[in-house]
Length: 104
Image (cartoon, rainbow, N blue to C red; front, side, top):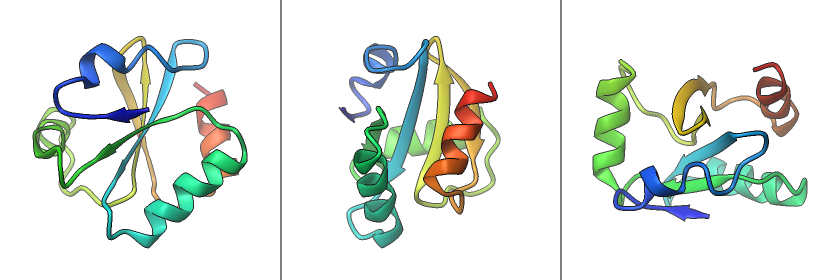
């Protein structure tokens, strides 16, 4: 599901697995983002995505609220019951992302 600044709060819990939502922050020019999204789709992993260039409020909010010193793309975050749980390093493979989700 494509999230926006306007719909993110309402939609974080709609597409999830055991009340967990994987959210990928991406930009159109990010090659790594495209590869990650393609790999998640190939493995039939349910996730939400948000374009960080088009939704700057989300970028600013997440940086301030969760004390991130920088936002690198792809931004990989996990939410549970609509609340931020953790940021996953963007160098992780799809397998590592799945392990991170399962270990929550």
